Length: 130
Image (cartoon, rainbow, N blue to C red):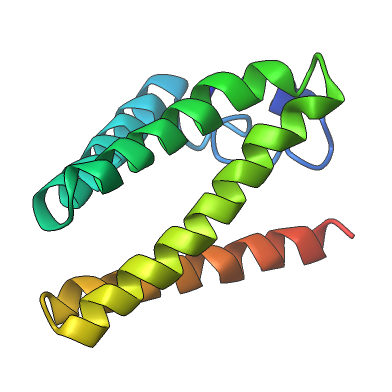
């Protein structure tokens, strides 16, 4: 959402929903805010507060720190790498916990489904631009 004007100028990113005009920046921001708040809420309700705090930290790092850093320093990869590593740990640990202890089997399966769909979409996007 933050970089849609820059994305509109780049060949690789100009066909994304906001730069291409398929969705407006305000609508995208609203959808993103609801999804982020929902994600942190799920963590807060079904896991420990520390998991929700880590989720919120990931949101802040990836949406607040990373976009502004990537145009000014090569060290912008650090927050991006942290988020990638944290998500991989979160996905494996939390989904495994949900499934192993059957505390909330459907939530565990939903997390696996969401993560798998995201990985497939990212891989397709990468392969489309190679």
